[in-house]
Length: 366
Ligand code: ADP
Image 1 (tube, rainbow, N blue to C red):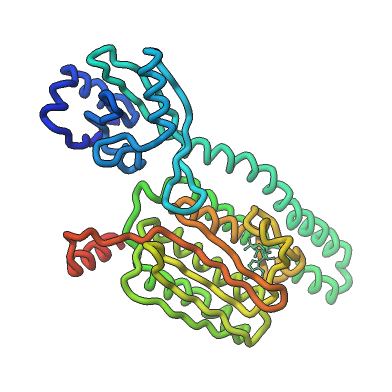
Image 2 (tube, protein in one colour; image 1 turned 45 degrees about the vertical axis):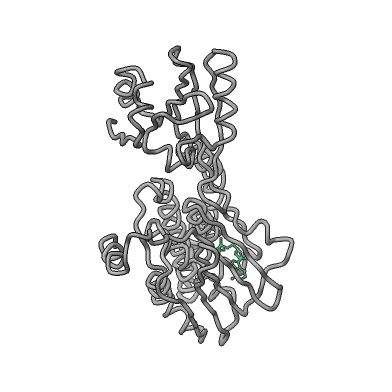
């Protein structure tokens, strides 16, 4: 992949770099840094800035600085994996494999950086998913097989046939919801949302998510109120962020008694976009709060099954916000209600872009 864009460097520092070295580095599929003494960055590939490894021409990642110093001291090639946060908050990380070697010329050090996050992420997702999914699929499939036997055995009892066939429909719907959620999850795994991120207007996304839940809210006489200011934007994948907000609204409806209220609030706090979804529902016992984001964890499996839950919704939400460099938290009191809050790094308009350009950028990216 010859995609590399190069960061600017001064003419003076360019003279220190042997001819041809940058050309060689540009054909390696890795980010790179060429460093002089004092960990001054003489030359770097573009992605090192996005990974927040370099600021104002200096290496700022402590583990990487240590590795470079070890290579300089020992004169020997060093290799390590390092973890860097994806954003200012949240648990998302970049897992980087870093190879550092003295260039053997003017004390220069070369660091090659391979981003392993994607591979590791996929691997761990695949492992726990396969373990859980077989169990979850077996339940409705087993029920369908028992019910079909019951239908066969009740050929002379039309009432029993109707009863068993209706149960079969419910189990078939559960199976199809589960498959849909599995498709949603596998889409999330397909790619890193920050690699092809677009500017997303959260006010619009929230109102679309509310529209898609309108019918189920009306059926339960649950009113949805929303307060969302204009101008709160984030960078990310539109369908993923909308899916996350919709899942939280659907849960607020599903786990609340009829005639209650769901409130959605969007706020900008310290350069973070904060979306809260509050309900007046069942609430969640304290002992379960830690676990509800795990795949297939349900507080009350019977209630979740009755509302058509798959046990995957919150794990999908957590996945989406983590991949967007954000986080999710929950506050809940059993019997009173719950508030789920997701925070995402805000997309801040650069100083030199005026409002008209910004609106154009938002529109173009949608
Ligand atoms: P499900 O498909 O079962 O709703 P989720 O992953 O969306 O799965 O949620 C996991 C569990 O967390 C649910 O089964 C439910 O017990 C609990 N839960 C989620 N949202 C709420 C809420 N707003 N109020 C009460 N309990 C909730």
